[in-house]
Amino acid sequence: MVPRLKTAAINEWFGRLPGSIGIGNVRYTTSGKCDDVSIIDGTQPVVASSEGTKVALSFNGNIVNTMSLKKEMNLNFSDFLYNCDSDIVCHKMLLGLKQGKTLEAAARIVMESLDGAFSVIGITGEGQFFAFKDQHGIKPLCAGHDPEGKTFAFSSETVSLDMNSFVRDFELKPGELVTVSENGFKRTQIIENPREAFCCFEYAYFSRPDSRFDGKYVYEIREDFGRNLVKEFPEIVKDSDIILSVPETGDDPAMGVHEASGLRWERASRRHRYVTERAFILLNNERYSTIDKKINILGNKVAGKRVIITEDSVVRGDTTKIIIEKLRKAGAKKVYLFVTFPRIIGPCFYGIDMSTYGQLIGSRNNPKEIAKIIGADAVCYQSLEGLIGATGQTENQLCLACVTGKYPTPCAQKMSDVMKKRFLEGYEEKNRIYESEEVQP
Ligand code: SF4
Image 1: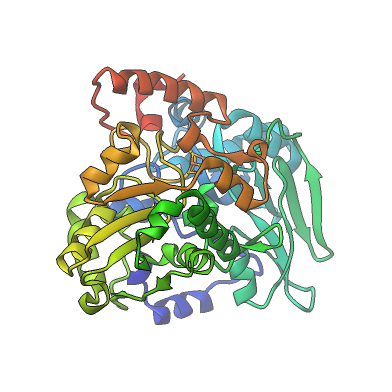
Image 2: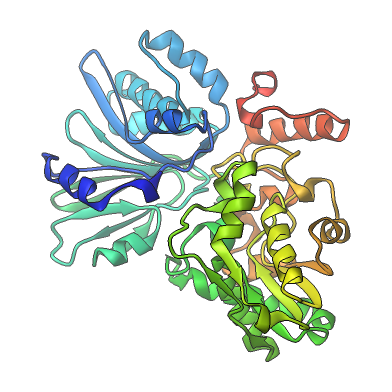
């Protein structure tokens, strides 16, 4: 949707907005329907009101116990309409404000009753500007201010603060509520976090390379991923002539591989500047033609060469398969795949749209089998230890559920255990697991 927006229309719209506080979100659909109309209906922020209490809210993440909460909202609000989990979070906050009377109490009610990942920003009917994170801190959310100290902002990534010349102040802690007044931020720890679980996929794929976590740029971490892969697969490096990176999230690890191995890094692919769809979030039938149009291979750079190609991750495998096909057609003699994120064996319930076992090539195939399916000579995943070490965090501070099967929240663990068993017995998943009534606790 975003590439379709016209700058002139946005500017005109901004000009019509009154007031001094605003919230917004670019939604990446992980719940509700994915057609254009449903996505527009589910656009954040969501606004809810009841008997004089009002709240507008926007969130990043995904709620796992959606179905049971949906029933609760239907009982409490006669006009409750469900498009996606944003409606649940907003109405739960509204219910919390009505029951708890204070913002702190409402945030506690939300944190205690939602299972999942939620980094929330919102405005109450009284004009209180607030932000909070779930008690595991799964998704990022940081705070900053303008150079004059008059305007305060929250953002899921530091890059948007940088781009607006704002100063980054802090990353919200898990279970923390932050409110804003003209004097700045007020931080309140609402719930002590039982176990921090920051999404490790943010480092490998989701975040922009020019964003920072704990003072370290994401691109630096990705370069370290590449250096690790050289250490972990010396035989493959020895058997290769060049390193390539397709698509963009592979660029920084490719730099790391190049520096650590001395292999020549070739820019052997060119991206079509005006094809802006992200292949990962497209429907199956759209993906092949989009990648085909988006990425062009320079045959003279790869013909007759043994090539290592760096990828951030392999989810379904079909994007990588197309790229490898294109490299082979261009004459590559061997194609090895270096993957920075370890093999994804289980779904994500927290805001990345890979929500069934069936769609994951790694849930039922080992690296050798995956290599055969996608047409690579070998698929080399970075080790879990390498990944964790490069982030500068410890295993206990990260969510690694999709690569280990250990989920940080109870409802997600229960659902994954039930569905994994059924999947291995041959059950065919039809919906995202957290949207299947049958596995809701
Ligand atoms: S399951 Fe994977 S993708 Fe989802 S939050 Fe955890 S690490 Fe991130």
